[in-house]
Amino acid sequence: MRNAHAKRPNGLDDLRFDNRFVRELPADSNPVNRRRQVYGACYSRVDPTPVKAPRLVAFSPDMADRLGLSDKTCQSDRFAQVVTGNRLLPDMQPFAMCYGGHQFGHWAGQLGDGRAINLGEVLNPSGERWVLQLKGAGPTPYSRTADGLAVLRSSIREFLCSEAMFHLGVPTTRALSLTLTGEEVERDMFYDGHPKLEPGAVVCRVAPSFIRFGNFQILTARGDMDLLKRLVDYTIRTDFPELGEPGPATYVSWFETVCRRTAEMIIHWMRVGFVHGVMNTDNMSILGLTIDYGPYGWLENFDPGWTPNTTDAGGRRYRFAHQPGIAQWNLAQLANAIYPLINQAEPLEAALAAYAEQYQTGWQTMMANKLGLVAFEKEMDQGLIDELLAILAAAETDMTIFFRRLARLDADQLTAAAATAEAIPNELMAAYYVPDQLTAELRGRTGNWFKTYAARIRRAGIPQKERRRRMDAVNPNYVLRNYLAQLAIDKAETGDFSMVHELLALLRRPYDEQPDKDVYAARRPDWARHRPGCSMLSCSS
Image 1: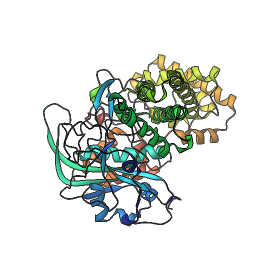
Image 2: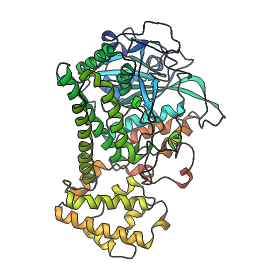
Image 3: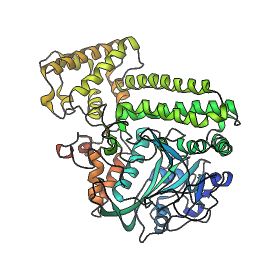
Image 4: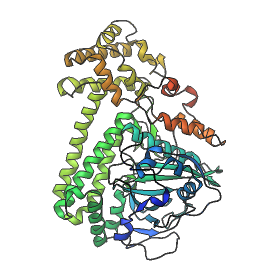
């Protein structure tokens, strides 16, 4: 059944481009596509680099429908040519954005769209604005020493994760398509001096806006206050029109909104066990969307200190438990960037403090929901949740499986299990990677938690059927486990894309029981514990 956003299936020629960003903001005056510092501009006009043999690997029916494109259109050769960058539609005005950012806590200066080229802004049949962006379509003035290209393995991960996160209910950019270029790209996956050739690929990403914190930071860093104001005013009028006409008070309201949306996004990350891996300020969306799927990962065994990024292995700046604090730090950098438009620190500091309060309150509500409770009650639930998280970290416990299986056990079953020497019901043993880690002390501690939790369930008076329904609605059965993505990559690199399609279909229904797909809900196999691509990843693409 097609959704309500598309009035009818359309072809590529029916896409209605608005291109407000390039119409209202200043362009780079230098038309030459060479690497350089770009001043006094929000973007540079640049065309994608044509490639040898574009070939469609997969597309998102949901996102295509949102744009008003039919499945038949997306399966055409012309579609593959367009979303790989070989052919431009008449109203497309491709460009790469200029922005800066803090990388791993240090100011990096100009960064920009080094391998991303925006094709234009589409107004869909419902009037929604969607920017089409190609990742891996060739160099731009912001590519620095890189080639602007992407490889199949990282492109599969981005394509699948963008769509998986959307269906999990996490605010995210989307992915329309994944294509091969027919060319090979050299990459040193581990930065160890052993590069190899890999299949080139392009992902067509889609979002209402790809503006990042760094778009504003670069202008303030360069002292370009006039252009900073133009960009902020543009952003408010285009993406936050409900806030009213731009001005100092509106700038504060806008920053407060960005803080709130960012808090909501991070809460969802923590709910499903997602670790972004590269929370630099240039990877933070002004809309509170998850953006730039690089060396991300999913918590399998619950380890608050885990990071999926090999580059971050030493300091673990972007580890799972640190994400809420890093988001606030990044917001503070955005506050510094827009301060010249407000000239008052107090309202910005108040918004940052409100972020912390909003996150904490939202996190408490989220954790209560994961446990099937109607509401968070601090006196009873804070200790209950703190102890649970400590228990989960004490042995290698699969977070996704634990919460999903916990919903199947009623208060009487939990109480009965706690009274036994084993203390842990068989239903939950599937969540433990190393059962020998379940010492008598830990089993007893877990059993005590079950008794406390059972008493809390009884006090809440929630029928078991309703409790399971509530828990299953927020605790996914399927996530894009690192090893699953790697298996799909392994097959795809031999020309077999069947698992890409299978995972795309599976992850469109992450909260449903899919009995014929139970293998994808199992814990990570032992062979994947330390295998590259299944445990940690580099920023190489």
